[in-house]
Length: 125
Image (cartoon, rainbow, N blue to C red):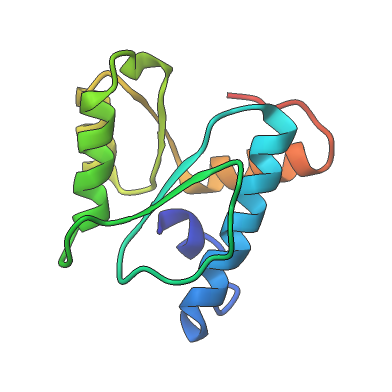
């Protein structure tokens, strides 16, 4: 959700459409870079079409920080967390993700990588 909120494009007026737009961007990013992408969203599940090259999840419970908790749990459960990059601009969540051994990238930096990939540029970590 940090990535959705990192662009003040009126996403709050139609959250479902904003999630669909982000999924489209993530699919293009995954196709261009070959990087695996998992998106974990807060809130109720919505129809996002049929993303084929990304893993879309909704938080396993409702409430505050639900997707954050799922992100940290996924990183902690991964046998090679140092290969993972958690995308968030939330400092506390970033600390929790780093504690699993995964790296963290800010939402703005990730948006720039997505834009570079869409333009045919190299994916820079």
